[in-house]
Every structure is written in C-alpha cells, then in structure tokens.
Amino acid sequence: MAQVTLVEAESTPAEPADEPADEPADEPGAAPDPRPRAGRVPLPLWAATLLAAASGPVMLVAFPAYGWWWAAPVAVALFTVAVHGRRPRAGVGLGALSGALFFTPLLSWTNLHTGVVPWLLLSGLETLYFALLGAATAGVSRLTGRCGRWGRYGWVALIGALWTAQEALRDRTPFGGFPWGRLAFSQDTSPLLRLAVFGGAPLVTFAVALAGALLAYAIIRGLTVRVNPRLAAAPIVAAAVVAAAWLVPLSRPAGPAVYVAVVQGNVPRLGLDFNAQRRAVLDNHARATIDLARKVAEGTARRPDLVVWPENSSDIDPLRNPDAAAVIDNAARAVGVPILVGAVLNSPENGVENVGLVWTPGRRVGEPVPQYTKRHPVPFAETMPLRGVARMVSKDVDRVTDMTAGNRPGVLPVGPAAVGDVICFEVAYDDLVRDTVVHGAQLLAVQTNNATFDESEARQQLAMVRLRAVEHGRDALMASTVGISAFADATGGTRDETGFNTAAVILGELRLGSARTLATRLGAIPELVIVAAALAGLAAAAELRRRDRRHVKNPTVGTKEDV
Image (cartoon, rainbow, N blue to C red; front, side, top):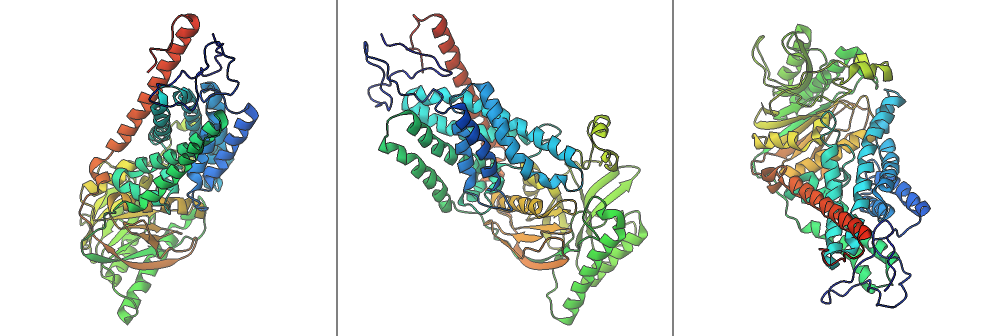
C-alpha cells in the first residue's frame, strides 16, 4: 500500500473515471509519486514571502494616480499563489505583508498634514483584513485537490468570493468601515467597470479577483503537475472575462440635458489650516461665480441651469451669519440660477453639520433652505471615536469637532434637476449613493474638499465617481475646493478635468436620468450572494479538514465520504 504523507493539506484522492485527473492516484504496491500535489505547499517559504511582498506594490499601481488597472488581477494571482497550500496561520503573515505594502503607500496622503502615527494606524487596521484574507485563502487550498474537477473550478470562483467578502467586512467595520482600496475602484479605465451596471462595486471586485484566480490556477497547477497544454486555457479565460465586459450594455440617461457649472475656487493654502481664512475660501467661490455671470452678460459664456460649489466652500454658517449669507446671495443673484453650496452649519439645536444647501437667487431672510446633511461623518476626521485614547496618539485630536450625522438621503431640487448630493468620502459607500437614486436623483453631485490631501487622493476619489455613474446610469460631477473637479458620464468617461491646487470653472451638459439599472434595483443582493458563497466555501474547506483529521486518528476511515 502506498505511503501517504499529510503535509498541511492532504494528498488528492483519485478522481472518478468520467473526470480524467491531472494527478493520477498511486497504484497499489507502486512507489509514491514524488511530484508535489495541488493540495500541498507548492513553494518554499522564502519564495512565498517574495510573492506576497510583490503583490502589494503590484496592486498599488493598479490605482490612480498610476492607473494600470490590469495589475489588479496580477496582484490577486501573486497573493493567491503565495498563500496557497499553507496553514492558515502562515496565510495571516503573508496576507499582512501584502496588505502593509499596499495600504501604507496607498494611504500616504493621510500623512501629509496629520503626522505619521495616524497614517500608520489606519494602514495597519486595513492590513488586518488582508491578514484574514490570507488565512481564508490558505484554508480553502485543499479544494483544488478534492471534489474532482468541479472542486478546482469552484476554488477559482471561491477566491473571487473571498476578496469580495473581505471588502464587505472592511467597508463596514469598525466605526462604519473605510472602503478605500477596493479592487473595483482600480478599474475606472478597465472594461470590467461596465459590470457595475449589473452588480455594483462588489461584482466588479469579484470579476477582478476571478481573473486573478484563473491566473493563479495556471501557476499553481504548473508547479504541481506535469506540463499540460490545457493549463494555458486558464489565462486565456481570464483575458476573456475582461474582454467580454466590453459587451455589457450600459444604461444611459435619456432625459433632458441641463447645463451645469462647477466652481473650484481654491483655498489660500493647503493643509489642516486651509480654513483659517474661511472668508477667503467663501470669497474665492463667490468671486469665480460672479466672474462667470459677467461672461454670461457679455455673451462669451452660456448661462448655466445650476451651479455647484464644493464641500466646505462656506465654512461660515450662512444661515446664522448675515455676512456669509450676503456673499452667497450676491453670487446667486449675479448668475441668476440656484447654487448648491457646501457649508458647515453650527446651531445649538443640531450642533455642527456638514451640509449641501440649495441657495436660490433672491432668497428672503428666514426662508427655509433645502439641505442635505452628511450621513457618514468620517471617523477620526469629522468625528472622534475613543477620543481619550486617540488624544494619546495625536495632539491634533481636539481639532476635530464631532459632527452631527444626517438621516435622510441627499436628494435636492436644484433648478430643473433633482440632484443626488453625496459629500466627499460618502461616494465610497454603496448604500449612501444608491439611496439618492432610489429616492429620485436624476444626476449625481459629489461635493468634496481635498485641501488636506493630494492629487493622488483626488484621482482615487474621481475613480469612484466614474464607477457610481456607470453603476446607476446617471451622469455625475465632482466639485472640489482645490481639484480635481470633473464631469463623468454613465459610460464611465470623464471630461473637463481641472488641475490640482488651482482655481477653475467648468461648464458642461449632463443628461437627467430616471431609469434604474439592475444594480440600483438589486442593491446589496449581489454582494450578499457572493459573501454567502464565500462562507459556504469556507465551511466546505473546514469540513474537509475535520474529515482529514479524523482519518489521521483512525486510518481505517477512507475517503469515500469525501464530496
């Protein structure tokens, strides 16, 4: 009887006769096949460490400002090969290595004005999720050598599901989550972006990881079995998955066109003290709007139907400060159309709020102003959880005022359009953007303030705007204090992108939409289905592990019960 050695994952049983095996079982009485099998560790630890270390930087360059979207599936493949066949605790270490080398540079813009410690803490927190992913990926390795050929096919899909599940967890925990660095947000120029119209960001992430898993499958099988021409099919299928996305029909808005002006007034200086001269920031945006009005009067510019100012364009509460109200009112009267103003309100009743206000020309004092209050204040930036503990980490903690969160979707009537207002980082959260469309938004406006960050952060955010436009079939815009401001259409394209740290005004036609895409109608259902598949795969792998341990304790128990 052939000797069987259990090494981290056990040897592969013979496959059914109707499923020709790439790894034939040892003949009774024959010497054991010295070739390693797919369930065993295919790489020495030093090689796995190098691959895990490489996967982080490779994933980094898939994101703006590099924008090499095809690097994302390559990074998934490197990550998967690195942890494949190892024990889950080894997967934790390798996953953490990959995550640290990805998130630390990706989030370097958080270090510009807040110091090293908050940046490293955030990067370390996000890295923990990659550590969990490494453990899970290692834990399902045995499925490549069990359950026949369908087990291997299922393993490929399971890798995609595990990446989606990791993001689903990271997007929600802790303190409401931090979705930066989702695979989907690296695909703003990729054919895979079009899949967002069916299942939003989770489906795009799944497709990216699926393509990476197919590449990993070819590498792993090439390391563990004799050379087989059929292995070349895996990367071909991965390329076909990407190319086929071009065939996905997109939902384009069919309503009337509106002419929109986005004002990027710029700030006196970048950094945490950008609002030290708050009146200067407000004046910059009012002055640019009045200049636009002058050009309209001269006939050198077309009058817009509405104007959008960015987040924090008025850090002085215009509902309680007559001077700020007068500045905004003068701009609205001059241009003759409503302005969506990003403002900070401060009242005894509601505390501090980050809002979008609809300011109409000739507004009377005391007249109600339609407004949207930001529903997800950014933890440790707009609200401070665990303030006492955080104070020991950074002296800047008490510069953060706890903002009051809103409780209604951001749908505002601005001139002829129902605008879906999304403020800054809210664009990264699936449900917050979808809510605006479900409640009647005809176009999307992302008001943001990038004065405390850099151009890479702004471009990463613009990539999210592009995905949301495709996902919900709505034309969109991004209005930033310092840049980048731009228009995005429902095909994922952008136009009129502004420079960073400059003053600019852009004008363009956007079409109003009313139809709902499949992604809008389904909401979180695609993500829930994928996460359920990931959990089922983990449960199946755990059951195989339990049976194998029982076989070790009782060698008379065979593998006939294996699925």
